[in-house]
Amino acid sequence: MTPSRTPAPTSSPAADLVITGCTVLVHDAQGEDESVGFLEDAAVVVRDGRVDAVTRAAEAAGLAAAERLDARGQVAMPGLVNCHTHAPMVALRGLAEDLPTGEWFNDVVWPVESNLTERDVELGARLACAEMIRGGVTCFADHYFAMDAVAAVVAECGIRAHLGQAYFSSQGDRGREASLEFALRHRGGADGRITTALAPHAPYTVTDADLAAAAELALAHGLPVHLHASENRDQADTSLARHGVTPIEVLERTGILDTDVLIAHGTGILERDLPVLARARGRTAVASAPRGYLKFAWPTTTPIRALREIGVPVGLATDGAASNNSLDVWESMALTSLVQKSTEGDPRWLTSRQALHHATVQSARAVGLGDRIGGIAPGRRADIILVDLTGPHTQPVHDLAATLVHSARSSDVRTTIVDGRVLMRDRELLTVDVPAVVRELGQRMPDLLDLGHGRRIQEYDT
Image 1 (cartoon, rainbow, N blue to C red):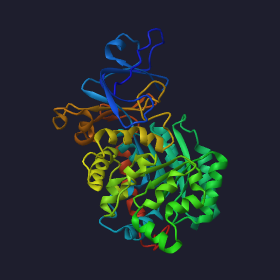
Image 2 (cartoon, one colour):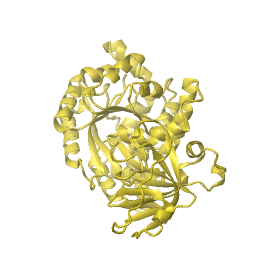
Image 3 (cartoon, rainbow, N blue to C red):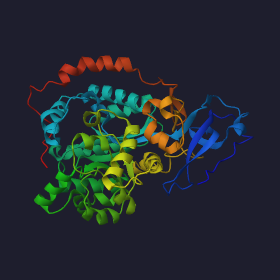
Image 4 (cartoon, rainbow, N blue to C red):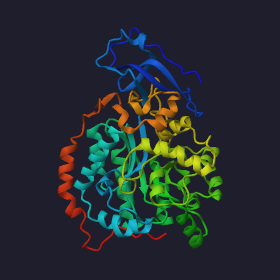
């Protein structure tokens, strides 16, 4: 593939930002195939929060700019997208280790979550956003509680987010109503950096009637849906035994697949589910978080190859740090390639270039932002990360795509930019006071971790 480039404008007003001397990761014009290319000794020109031009560094040398970044030795990439997480759950990192799924939920996580206050959620979201910005994540899809607090953090720290207020049927109609109210109240917030979704938790915690009601509301208000479904094989098998249908078939019969839907995990998607997903009327995508599946010892992983064949994009994710221990999408990218090779028994699948495509173009599509982010090209929002490849662990470079996926680390991200605003420069985080967050969160721990009340927010029984 020959990367296209746009010459720098010669008569336009001063640029807001010029990144120069870098190698730019580029896609074909439509991003339809899974190839990526690299434009060397390049410059990226940013105006009004958008990429204005991608050109040769020499052609941008004389261009007036409010700010210039010398990125020699670095790769400019589209910012990574964390397609499914529970950001505030960083407060539970390492709390529920080495447990089967049911015990993880019922004995630790859901009892602790019954203690959550809005302040806990806010502090967790701040710490999570700091971690993601430092790891090159410029957008995340979140599905949690007290989401007004998360939206406020997003607005303040400058990241992009796709947010949904989670609910269970055990909350009655009020849970669904609160999810809708949140979605309508915050849609387009933070200067357009916030998009929203309805967020029923999962088919095993939300009844068919409530899922059908969610689908009707989503269609009526032009909202997507973000939920867990067929997270693992046990859920699929249990649903078949109890109801005669898979969780994916539940989504079809309740109308959820008539909406634009983001399905978290899907490691329990069966062969019989593929034609169901293929005929979905809405835009359907799946978010895959392989590290958590390995920790839970789930027997299967997201069937990325089969989903690709029916045209369903798969975005990369971390899930919450309570199960994954980190919000490192870079690690998810590398693990996705490795786990797929092992699962398919084919070293040619998933390639480094395919992994980069999932981390950029497909992840942007998964959260409904495929026309705005996921690529560095004129007209796209300027969500850009600069990755330093001068370290000994990334040298020499024989295959740049392989170096990025299998040698580079999230700590190699030097600079993170969202909407043209620099959120981290040369590893200095500019929008979150991490020590202050850590101090206050530590003070909250005794109350947050108290299990003496005997409550839990839900029962995991699949």
